[in-house]
Amino acid sequence: MMLTGYAGAILKPDSGAERLLVRSTSTAKSEGRKTVHKLRGALLIAVFVVAASASVCFAQQDPGVRQGPAGAGNPIPNFTANQLDMFNEGRFRVTELEATCDTCSDLTPGTPTGQDPLLQTITNSAGLGARFNADQCSACHSQPAIGGSGGFLVPNPEAPPSQRRPPENPMFDLIPHRRGERNQVPSFITQFGPIREARFIRKPDGTPDGGVHQLFTVVGRVDDPTIPGCNATVLPQPDFETQVRNHNVSFRIPLQMFGLGLIDTIQDIEILARHDATASLRARFGITGIPNRSANDGTITRFGWKAQNKSLTMFSGEAYNVEMGVTNELFPQAVEELPACNGPSKNHPNDVTRTDTDDSRNQAFNNPLHELADWMQFTLFMRFLDGPQPVALSPGARRGLRLFGTDQNHPGVGCFLCHTPTMQTAAATEIEALQDKPVNLFSDLLLHHMGPGLADRITQGLAQGDMFRTTPLWGVGQRIFFLHDGRTSDLLQAILAHDDSDADAGAFPPSEAKGVIAAFRNLSAADKQAILDFLRSL
Image (cartoon, rainbow, N blue to C red; front, top):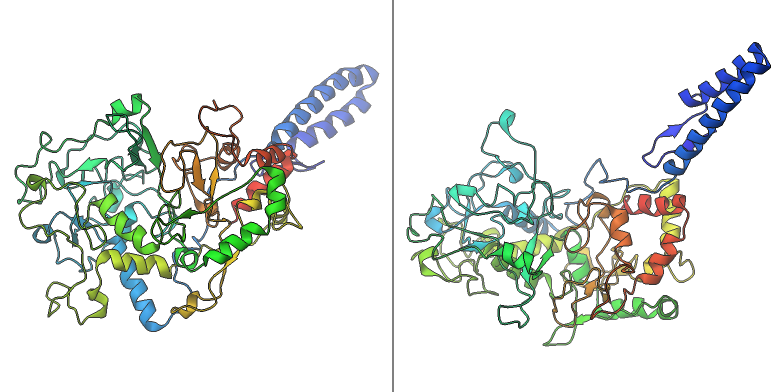
């Protein structure tokens, strides 16, 4: 007898419970019929307990964040020396800690600190806005390596190693209180919960909002003498608690940046061809899917939870301004322009192509590593990041892949109809390392109606209030939080949330994933577990 537990425990033939049954039977034979009758009842109870345990043991469960090497955060292979230099410079810029002005930075902006990138305490960049969500790109992109999704950071990195507290959500203490800032932490930011960006659904007059409302301000900052008049009266934090009570807040969590250059190089015709190839099978499941498109040239947009950003360049420039308040050539106006909280010496835009005649400010035009603005180097870092690498599939995970589905000839339960396993980059590009490469992203990069249970009531481009881009699943094995708002850390619950059977329909149609989730629910517990094991291998 062998009972496989849902948490990996195995009841082997020589286990304690099995030995108890064997020993009891032996005793019965030696002590006569009366004892046998007594033990028979005990055996029935024992068998019942084991059977009950078996029903629990076979229940499916998310194996949890995969341990071991990150398998991500590295450059795409076969780069030229120049490209690798740009990747490494971009990685450095991603870890820089922002000050509020050039003269407030501890070091000349662009100077290495010698600190662990994820234990940074020395400011070596400038331009942090009066309102912001983070003061360092890597604060929101650290799991399982720099460039990943939201993870945990040590909240007191300035302390000696022996006195550092366990890693936690950096929005809970580290970011809101850096350098004396006196921010109140909203209730939806918890110590070990997800990093969250907040968007308001409606404006006070009832018209649609949908924009990001930054969580924190520079009020109380002790390292910037140029903003003495900046206080909570002139620069209050938004009243998030009232908005939460009014159900007027929608949350987004950080997405990983691994492999985005490969995704950026996939042509529209490839996306549409992969979609068309499964048309008949999708129709049987009730899955449609449409691209979000640029309002200017009509091409497919593909980055962000609703595929609202056209390119990595757009994504990067927007992130610098929206998340850190750093103005740049794509977003030259500050989120908050209040003079009292920006200081007279802050340039607008702040982070631009460097044109200095020497490198005294690390901004020499003739130094290729310093010429580009931080947000541009961030773009190159993302473009050159390789996709996350899966681990070798166990027999159970291989079965999970077959059940997940790979193509129309091997559809499984149909997960692959949205989570397209592979696409191909363009046949020829300027960056040879990116051309004609398979991209094992597990996404069709299209928008789907996900039903009222997941609806965030925010429209972006063609993405309506219940629509989201299919999230790429590569790297899901080491993600901590799932779904657009980080509502769960349980991969099984994230899967089941794709079906909105228990949700109030309201203004939104049923989820396009409804039929696939029904098929998933009808699987045996062992088969469901196989799919979970496969996903946690990615």
